[in-house]
View 1: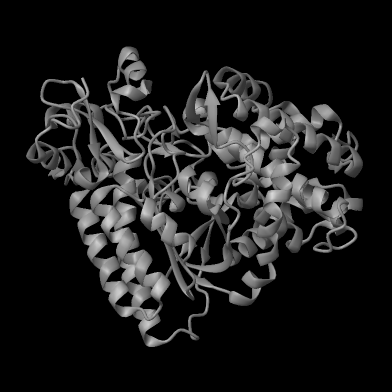
View 2 (view 1 turned 60 degrees about the vertical axis):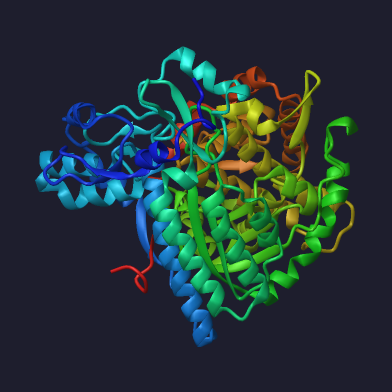
Length: 573
């Protein structure tokens, strides 16, 4: 039974308080949803030894220092940044609780069982924010605990009838900013983030207000004050609107945003943070792109009735260097760009902001994408691989998140694509944005825009091909990885991608690719426009698997890192 409105405040506060568990050698700080004996029973079940290839899995993440120059910042800006990083570390703590039930207790149990591998396991546990490998369908890499699909957003013992109860929006358990827990009678209730994480969010709010008092930038000050208030009220609309107007050398994106971590329903937002320094010159170079969004929306390959022609198109673009990241974005594969906020009300009013993390992108191009291409891309297409094409596709991927269906009408009721596609939404949306990013560039080039060089079709095609292998290596159990498997398998079926039996290298037919990418965009858009969950499942099942030809290609990449592991030595010991 849902009791959000009637639950006494003090009971909700008690639910949010950390407890010291007896599980593990020393215990740890956790948020409990069960009595301690039951916690110990679940944590205590883990005994399985670490996977044999742990060293190989660790080597897939290359430690990379992200330390952009901040010499041009004045004293106040540096102080503001330091406050924002302190608040970001609290986002890390909150995300650990959201992602992994009894995080510290599990870490303690692993230390107890396998002290001889403590250093390696601790590093991999930190990368994955738990004992489950994010690259391999969240399979346990140590301990043998089964990964809860709903992470820690829901009780571990949900019944099928309770899952159905949660999906009924009238019961109020599907909110973005609530944890679902059991009350004293065992019934399900929604506990607001502001209550469940009250201690940490109160501290984070105070730090944001301290930073606001130090900055001389009005747009940053207004956002920080509003976001601090949102931490305590769970109402993020005003601060999201102000974040769209943020124009500061030091910028921050902080709060609950993406829903990837909720693999059960895709309802719950995870906390994260990016602290960045803006490059105003490079940002200005790309500013004209946002003006193209209405034109692109009007030409999407779906019926006009499904187009979102009234969505805001302000859509600022920021090119930044990452100074610090935390929370959801720090787990597993590292973000190279993002497109926020996700609130459709904000998107309809102002569009969305595209932020490109230049130093992260360059690190991945140099250390990962280029070595992959040298192994797998046909030699006669290697010269077409460029860092600028990688940058442009990343940009238009993020721009494409703001195109296409958002709010939709299904069976006479107003709803959102995200709510209708549930656990399939993230994978399908990432596939859409990737494919549409190419479609955007090709459409603009064909219409005679002078944004791109004459050989943009070849450059985009070769760079995109190498990028598919880079992203599939994230694992098809992860939204971005599976989205790239979908694209690869779809394009293979259409004949846009082929593999040489003699060399084992892959080629991309530029002309066929341009046609096929438009067809892929159209198929995904109609599933989204109709909010067709069953069609989404079928599409992913058909194209989202690890085919033999894809697997053979990936096997050749052994020894090339899968991703970077960010190191922020300025701010972490």
